[in-house]
Length: 274
Image 1 (cartoon, rainbow, N blue to C red):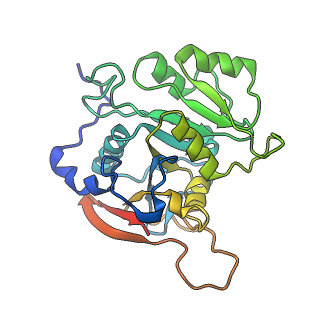
Image 2 (cartoon, helix red, strand yellow; image 1 turned 120 degrees about the vertical axis):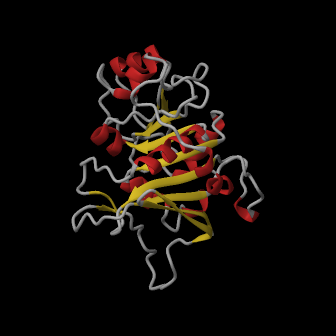
């Protein structure tokens, strides 16, 4: 039996993505590192590079075909990651609603990614109405892992454990003192050590810009961007990674082997990180 929120992504729309998905683990020179997962950075943006119309405001950009593509991408990764700001603002599902995956016509939770929320300072207030937890209870998604540097509250630990989730506490410096400065290489290595071979990173703006910065861009395996034919105007949350503290005019990051694909009114750009 199908559900009203179930999505279908046809075979003819999938081919252009294959070279940028984790099954294509081809040698990548000095960037190959078995201690890291395959990292796909994916997001939807307006023509003026905005992710949302204002900080903390959920903004729908993807059309129906590119939205279905996003759920197909989720089915092809072991995990899906967002920052705490997105978790608080959107109360996201972070599951896959594609026909045939676990919970949507498939067996068990096959095809469902593990939700991971980066929450260094313990800002995410889990409760009985948190969407991810309810979906896990219903067997329509996996329970989340929350990566933090602080000892979590007992009630939050209980909520997560009841649905099979967990807090993952990482010491952020040699003295083990909790700070907000978790390094992305440390985070990704820790996630890989927990058995995650591929991860899809969806946002929000702070996470995307940090991973596209010169210090972290080499951690990204591929980038898949949906470009919606609209402008959101000034004041939005924009994809614009910080430039290094030099006078260099070189690009902060650049894609190679790019492919452009039309999906409805949207255009999808795929590329590997140089």
